[in-house]
Length: 375
Image 1: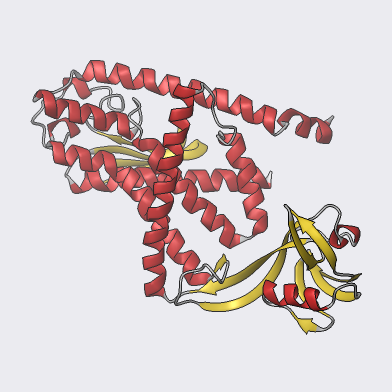
Image 2 (image 1 turned 180 degrees about the horizontal axis):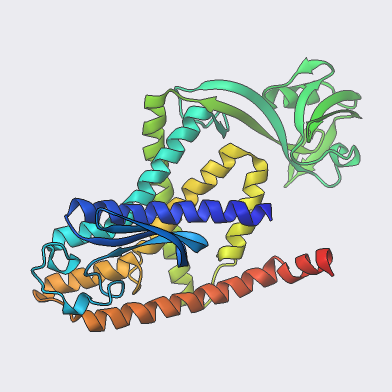
């Protein structure tokens, strides 16, 4: 139940942020906004203020905005005169593009805000590769992998264990532990670790080992330096912008690889997830801590923005494509036809979501999950 609640809050908030971008842009352009809804109908309650109905609805999976004159959203769009000053139809190309892109822009801006907050609170990262100018609040060495036939495996060490000290000597860098192991070949050492907030001491003997044709002395673990680094606000904002930019570029690259694989090999990556997959990931991230949940929300916000930019009918990218077509043709597109195209596109998106959801059900064994608890 907690997973469902967190997922609904996260996804609902991000969708509302997106719709708020359209809402603000339309208002700024002097266009009539008929309704701004939190959740989807049926309606629980609604209050009209300055010509806009603000509604709270029963299905809590995001929100919506109804802008006068938008084909597919406004059933009377095809009846409106092109020169109506309070209608989307009567706006210039630049204004239409700005209003349609505003939702995407708001998602990217929100990601910048979240990343800036994360860097201000303290960003978990590798101190050796983290951006300069931050203050290290805590530094730890974490076991990231274990050789199956090494001393660490025999001592039942686990990935995620935090190394606190060895023979009473504090460890805050992985190189320190590696050097200690080298100088204590075939000598038993006491390793003090923290596992799930419990302190454990194990006796372990560094030995000569080999991995991928490399010889070394150690206990058979992979180590990762870990630190929480806090940055001043002005540095955090800059890092928020650069992180959002680089992440957006990486997602576009992944999207390109996805499309290329579909056309070249006819396969789709197993990494694609629908609502159920995202809900599972949300639960896993929330268990790691608040800072990781914020980071996950920033990534979801960028993904939501990029997904809406795709030139698919019913999405913002599809509507932008019609606006560009209208600009090229130098005459309005038939609103009835555009509305039908967006409706068909929306139905196809629902089918796609259903197919991905079925994949998630199989991958995460959803029915088995419920059966093991309720039957």
